[in-house]
View 1 (cartoon, rainbow, N blue to C red):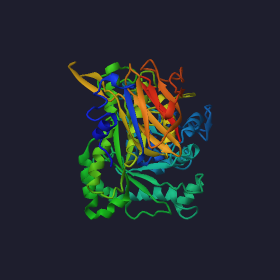
View 2: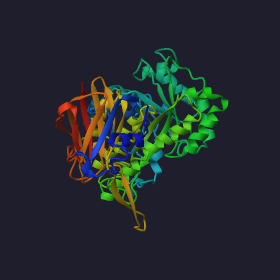
View 3: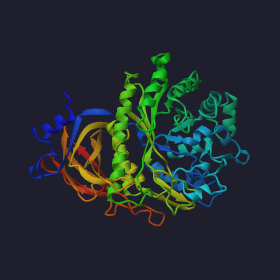
Length: 551
């Protein structure tokens, strides 16, 4: 029998007493993790460790693309340091070319000889949203006028270099289904079979790219067309009807809700299935976008302790969003054929003042952002039966990036190190785990400085198993207190353990070009007690990975 959370807690800590309510002196440790090896959730899809590339700010130009003739070390024009670092963490699927940019983009502009490719106005040219005034005053450059020097073929080469599948987002707003079918043809038709396959060969790739993942529009409720959900459902059916497959099994991803808009989800699925429940089979994933942002101060490293907790708690809303949309999807998809793809997520700050003007939304992430990375990845893994893809926005030089770069300077952000730490989860089986710890209190202040008391969990994470290795990852948001934690494996004995920890005494610690290794994870020895017992102290303000070998 599978116990509910309250019954489980009562049973594991003594009937009638929950750990968070019991006297501290009653236990040797102040927190507890219970891991149930015989309660699998599902396989953690490696695409949960996906990424996102958009023609926005300096993501593509000077981020990924530097050009073949650049003095910066490169592979066929692609920044070599980026390729080398990304390969090491075995990335999942990479999404391209947007984002809002996708629904203005004509893929045909980005192929063929570069000197003949047209220049277009970039979608983000006139943006004022969180954009610094100097960005709005820019008169030129790829941030304003897209050169199309980086397109489908360059992106395909980049994905091949780092070992990642391609995920392409189709233009639903300004191009029709025929243009989409021609893109399918260009990417997937066998060599020398169609005019587009011959064009692909002429551009350097005889063999097809065999792209499986296709997004049908992006944020179609907003920048992707301002559609009603019923209108978008009709367009989705039209774009996905009777496409030639070229032997590729397509995985179409629908443009899902903005955060908690369950109305969008319900009305889309209702309209989609008007022609019968079989329409569900066209849909592999339902895209969900959610960004967390601070109130008041918006600069990434300008926050106090209450801001620290506030943003972490806002990010933790992801769990509720997944559960709420999953419930609505189940009203129409009782066989659970459609999964959730969180293909945009992260903490969205204002641009750092010391970043170049054109580097829209670029900032050096801090320890706080690293904890947000950890708590989101843990959330996806706790819902491995629901979430099959996730893509932080974005890969480099903008929102929640893993990397920052400018000319020949390059650095990995704390987010990169969290992805490296969590790598062993990919492809493993997520197993049920319960994290029990006192909540941490903080204060929120509104615009009138009125205080509201709030709190967040004191320790949370996820667990997975592969062969005889159990991987436990955890976030301790408490900026002052370590969490001495009793760790129990139900169904096996711990033989040995080791830890890898990302933390700092300064909550604002970040990696910059001047100090690229200011915040990096460190390994710790862990002693397993007699009989396989384990008590581990999770450092304050930390992300931790425990690797447990079991008998």
